[in-house]
Length: 249
Picture 1 (cartoon, rainbow, N blue to C red):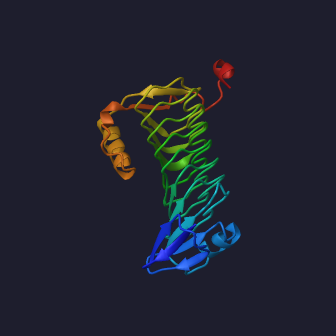
Picture 2 (picture 1 turned 60 degrees about the horizontal axis):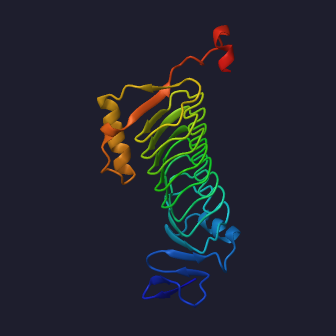
Picture 3 (picture 1 turned 45 degrees about the vertical axis):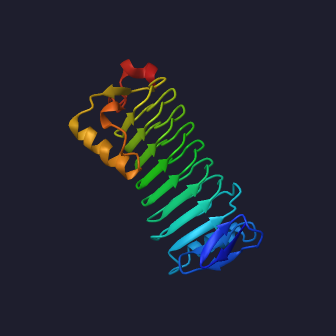
């Protein structure tokens, strides 16, 4: 709940807020406005550029399918597929995110201040996903060009069948990291429980340190030393079928 005073929103007051237009941004309270109405307004061209969403209460598909240079801040936890298929917009979740946050993202950026459930950034084709907490299983599954920076740890099967793009993990990685990976790059600062099929550790060269420094800076983690990371990628043994590799399929 919130109320407006002097063009600013104060959270925690008793006044009931539905949709309020201010000089700074448009404020939508999902306690009294439907999710369908919020998403409809976010897709109306040309509409307000800056938005604040209150009381999401774990709603699914908040700010999904955006296709404009919007700035959307969400105060609270969200459910499945928040900011899915994002294009151009910047979406920030001041809380945790459920399954598939930023799924199939094309461009723009999605920032989760808390932790993310499984399949964060799945099939993402571009843009930047930042998770300040942990991400659970299958983070970056089948990623196709997205950049993902997780400041905590990731769960098992992360970057499974990752095709292109880059994943940076400042914490630890679970089992089967990069299983059946193609040409994506994975950087991990902490420990790795186990590597998946055809995923191997590779040399961390100067070009990779520079790449890491840029990604860390973009995610607001530029205090981390790129030299502390290890790089993982494809051994390229599963690209084509060979009878000697039958047991790996």
